[in-house]
Amino acid sequence: MVPSRSGRLINRHPGPAAGRLLALVPFALLLVAYAIGSEIRLSENPNDKLLPSFTALSDAVERMAFEPDKRTGDYLLWVDTVASLSRLIGGVALATLLGTAIGISVGLIPYARRTMSAFIAVFAMIPPLAVLPILFITFGLGEVAKVVLIVFGIAPFMMRDLAMRVAELPSEQLVKAQTLGASTWHIAWRIVLPQMLPRIIDTVRLSLGSAWLFLIAAEAIAAQSGLGYRIFLLRRYLAMDVILPYVFWITLLAVVFDFVLRRYQTWAYPWFAAARAPG
Amino acid sequence: MTEVSVRNLWMEYGDQIVLERINFDVPAHSFVSLVGPSGCGKSTFLRLLLSQENATRGQICVDGEPLLPNPEPDRGVVFQKYSVFPHLTALENVLIGLEFERGGFSGRLHGRAKRNAQAEAMQYLEGVGLADAAQKYPSSLSGGMQQRLAIAQALIKKPRILLLDEPFGALDPGIRSEVHDLMLRLWWETKMTVFMVTHDLREAFYLGTRVIAFDRVRKREEELERYGATIAFDTPSDPAPFVTELATAEAAE
Ligand SMILES: Nc1ncnc2c1ncn2[C@@H]1O[C@H](COP(=O)(O)OP(=O)(O)OP(=O)(O)O)[C@@H](O)[C@H]1O
Ligand SMILES: [Mg+2]
Image 1 (cartoon, protein in one colour):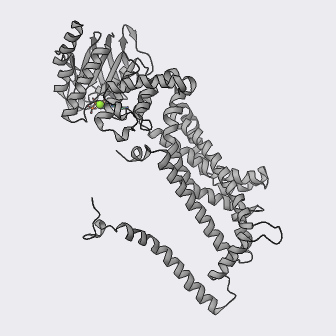
Image 2: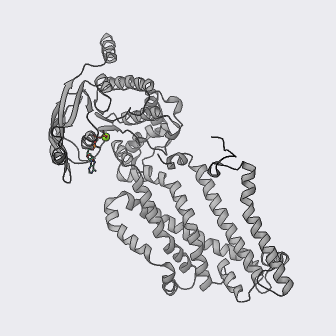
Image 3: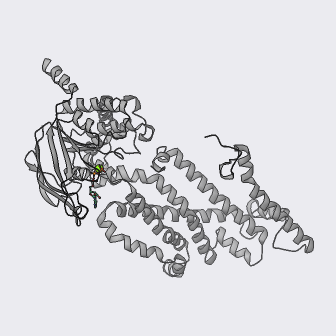
């Protein structure tokens, strides 16, 4: 159907160019609103810290990203980024491995389901931030506690989500595989796991938001570096000129991850788009 | 050559009796069409033949032996849908039966063993007219092609019994008669015993050497739960003219 541009509102579609332009509008509006707000506040009080001017922001970026820190000699933004990303990726990778192994077992094997599913359901209800002190006490203030918090926060969701995806596979497939001579292991390895891989990407995409949340929470409380650590450290000095670019940078990283994962999914699993469509 | 005998088979789900007193024997190399109204238990009967579920009472024997307790390669199946694996290409879908058998723990073949198995799988794809589509995923095949793929996939295991649950229901008439002839040729060549569920009586009589209808004998509302369907009708059917041709061709050789 060719998108129509007249008639009832629900039937009217913007053309491709207009669509792209429309998508930019909210961003532009936000930027303009910020510029105006900052202008007003600064004209009233040139030392106002809340909405720094664009020059102040770019100076701060210059200082954090491209000049060595006076005390340590490090380029702070990059040091923080590496520290945060290694925790995030470590935690997400570990949670994904756990989620996949347990999710597939629970989804596929009735004995595993009866043993684990109630336990996982209860476990998933524990608020991860409430156990953060326990993690710090148990694992110390180092990297382990932060990675474990991320795993703790997202792995139960991943397990349940994947167990559900496995259970959604038509039972015909499992019967068919058996009539082709497959063992339970063969079915898990050649039928279920390969069909779960693109779904795992979906699950990871959904989990990344929470993973960032837990990472920043852990860094805010106990760390010597990291994007979350820096934001909470500078909060004491009301250094909005650094905090805002940091928030922007974290958002950008999250958007890029999401984009890359989605692209990878369509590229690596060309069969998946049709398999996912209902019917 | 496989005989199947069904002895006093009952199937209940909770309080609901679905099938009762099913008794029949089919000689080796039969083509049995199963017909009956919707919900009378045809698919249930195929699930019992597959060992996907266990009968409440009674027994099914194959060549005098009770059925194995799990679905096994001695019985192939083509479902109405979801019969092929969406993440594998047509060739891989056929190949996977050989890989499970020969690929050991990983269920994968490599190098020469893989090329040999691929060549073998290609023959089956050619047999169902899908050689050109070998590298395609099922989602880019038409309904008829998917069903032919499912047949090739099942046949590579050389099952003694083939179970078909409304396999051709979704096909348009032209393709359907093509697939019918294909099915008859494969049935004739492999000498397997086929059970096919269908809603189409013409198809049932055209393909089958025997037509068995399930139906409830008692149909009053309050009796529906307590009485299951049983064999209402069981009749031999002449083999299709195409089979006679195959038979004469074979005799001439
Ligand atoms: N797992 C199950 N649990 C409970 N009842 C079931 C189950 N499977 C089937 N039934 C019931 O058994 C009866 C027969 O179902 P079945 O699917 O075998 O019918 P069918 O003859 O194949 O029908 P159709 O022609 O519509 O495919 C139905 O009343 C159905 O509700
Ligand atoms: Mg059915």
